[in-house]
Structure formats: C-alpha cells, structure tokens
Amino acid sequence: MPGIPCSVDELKPPAEGQLARIENGRLIVPDNPVVVFIEGDGIGPEIMASARKVLNAAIEKLYQGKRKIVWWEMAAGEKAVRECGKLLPEATVEAIRMTRLGLKGPLTTPVGSGYRSLNVALRMLLDLYSNIRPVRYYGQPAPHKYADKVNFVIFRENTEDVYAGIEWPAGSQEALKILEFLKKEFGIELPKDSGIGIKPISEFKTKRHMRRAMEWAISHGNKRVTIMHKGNIMKYTEGAFRKWAYEVALEEFREYVITEDELWEKYNGQIPDGKILVNDRIADNMLQQIITRPWDYEIIVTPNLNGDYISDEANALVGGIGMAAGMNMGDLIAVGEPVHGTAPKYAGKNVINPTAEILSGVLLVADFMGWREVRPLVEYAIKKAIANKIVTYDLARHMPGVEPVKTTEYTDALIGFIKEADLAEVLGNQ
Ligand code: NAD
Image 1 (cartoon, rainbow, N blue to C red):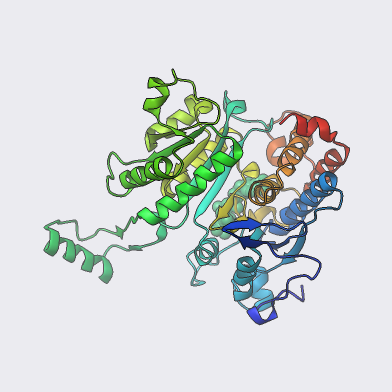
Image 2: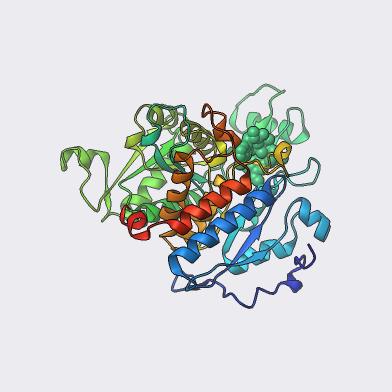
C-alpha cells in the first residue's frame, strides 16, 4: 500500500489523532490516541482487520464517539520488504517510540535475513522488557477439568536469560576460547565438543520487570503474585531473580504485600482485602501446580525461559493457541501481539481464529491505555459467540456437530453482540 512511511523523515502522525504523552512519570492517553498497527505476515492481515473492527465497535458502543483510536499503519516483515526494501524499517520502530502504543500481527523471519527473529529485534530495539500473557477461559472446548478456574496473567521477562541469544556452536572458535578460559581461570574442564550458551539475569532488569507485575496486580485488584524460578539449582541467576523480585515487593510495595509466612501467622490463611500475597514456587512444581490447583495463582512472574514453558502449558489448559493473547511492555510503552505465529498454510483463506489478536488489542486498550470497560464488553461478545457455537475451525473441530464459521463471519458476530449488549448488565457483572 503506498503511503506507508519507510524512513524517519517521512513520519507524520495522522492529523485527526493525538499522541499519548508522559507527564510526571505517567502515561496520559488522549481520547483520540494514535495507535500504530503492523498487519504482519501470513494470517496477519486477516486477524488484524478483525481486531481493529472489533475494538472500534467496542469503543464506539462504550464511549459513543467521545473516544476513538486513530490507527496508523506501519510495515514490518514481508510487507516492509515490498514497501521499503527491508524487513524492519527505522520508521516503524520510531513510530512506536513516538506513539508509545502499538498492535502487531505475527511476523515471519526469513532464514538468512540477518535477524534471529524480527519480533525479538523489535522488542529489543524498543526495550519492551515484560511480556504479558493472560490465560483465561471463555467457554471454549478445553482439555482441562478445571479450565473454568484458570485465570492467570503470566509476566515473562523478555530481554535476558538464555534467550538473550548469547551462544556459540560446538567447535567454534568462540566456544573453544571460552572452554579454554574456563579451564585456565577456574579449573573447570568441559567436553571439547560442547556448545556454549550464557544465561545472564541482572538485578536491574529483574527489578523493573517485577515492578510492572506489582503495579499490574495493584491496578487490577489481584490478590496473588507468584515468582517462578529454578533458584534451588541455578542460584545466582534464577535464585537471584527470586531474591530481587522479593526485594521489589517488600521494599517498594510493602503496604500491599503479605508473605506466605505472614498469611499463616497473622491472617489464618486468608488474604485480607487490599493485600497481595507475594510468594514463590520452584519452576517444576509451578508447572504442576497450575494444573492441580489453578485457583491458587493469578500473576506469575518469571524469567524468560520458564515463561516460555508455562505460557504454552497454561494456554493448552484452556484450549489452545487461537485464543492466546500477549503484550510486550516497557517503560510507558506497549505493543500488543498474539502468542501464535503466521500460520502460513491458512493465510488468505478466511478461516483462522482472530481472537488472540483481538484480545491482544484488548490488553493494549483496556489494560495498558486504561479504557477498562473495553475488556468486559469484548469478553462478553467472545463468550456469547462460543456459547452460541459461532466459532472458527480450530474450536469447531472439538465441538461435535458444529460447523465452523469464517473469520469474517465470527468477527461480524462479535460486533453484533457488542452492538446489542446491555451495558449495565455487562459492566455491572464485573
Ligand atoms: P504458528 O503459530 O504460526 O502456527 C502453528 C499452527 O497453530 C497453525 O498451523 C494452526 O494450526 C495453529 N494456529 C496458529 N494460529 C492460529 C489461529 N489464530 N487460529 C487458529 N489456528 C491457529 O506456528 P509455526 O507454524 O511454528 O510458525 C509459523 C511462522 O510464524 C514462522 O515463520 C515463525 O517464525 C512465525 N512466528 C511468529 C511469531 C510472532 O510474530 N510473534 C510467533 C511464533 C511464530
């Protein structure tokens, strides 16, 4: 599409919108904020079209023209190659930095492109250090007996841990040099054919991540924040993550926080109103606990790798990837992004489930921008569609006798439910 800016000089936000701004360390979102969107590759254009329509309909219903998103398209991935001759134009990164608000579809990273992953590059360039993945049940077919009890928000650190990409193949000059160094300096002898990966976890990055999780818990009225770690074994990385996370909770949020000891010593096992229980679980136990006792967990704060494992497991409990939303957040900047990829074999077929992209938009608009009413309204429409068996193929195949609808039909059904919703009832139930 002509008109997508490629270079920073061409950036001109749409005149009918205003940019979110920072005042006294807080994000001020105007009633007509400019929000960058990136369609993405594969199924991206279909799910992004659906997400924008559903969000616009919910905002119109709730605020009747008083609030409106002004969408601003930027390119990344294959579209950016077509439009700008490169996978990730500077203009795209700068536009998100400028607006502080973005919603993206999934992106393909071509092999040999020079990027390990385009998504990771975008997160790193914008320092979007916390990946937030809510896992909820909307009545979809789900394999777990307690699926209706699942309601977690996983906070996964985005920028360090073994995922930071510091690694070298076995036999490479770098790997051999490190093996030599370990032997010479520390007397540690490892097999010569070892690949080497480095797992950095720092105090600064752990603490800023935990801060976002605590702020989320306070602003959303959550009662439990659990630190997930493997600190019993990896003491100075995962163990330190646990220690630093507790320090943030106890030093910066003490008025809200009770510990597990205090819960039993002072409160007889009941979390008092206005308090948040901050506890920790070792990673392997945590992976069991969300299955056996999902009701005991609300916010789960983890380093990168644990977060990867637990979010897939948690999403499986409630029925899969087409519903799995995400958002990447930094200091007063956020980009919504579904957990799934570009699903290339379904691209252009109008069959895919757009719910994950829609809910990623809800994270941005309701939870980050603070237009809170958008969440219950959109969730109401999703629940209603599922209850009425209006679902795409991925859910229909687990619902005997149900014919799948097209992506666009599902989108129209959601918009219909939003338009007809009795707001007093939908918002009153919150
Ligand atoms: P994928 O998530 O794209 O698809 C795997 C399968 O999951 C699909 O074949 C489909 O059966 C199902 N699926 C995914 N999304 C769905 C939806 N919305 N509705 C219904 N079913 C859905 O994973 P993949 O095949 O491993 O990766 C394909 C491409 O996506 C790769 O190039 C990968 O790099 C990229 N990717 C991008 C992101 C991102 O942009 N954040 C994330 C993961 C993968």
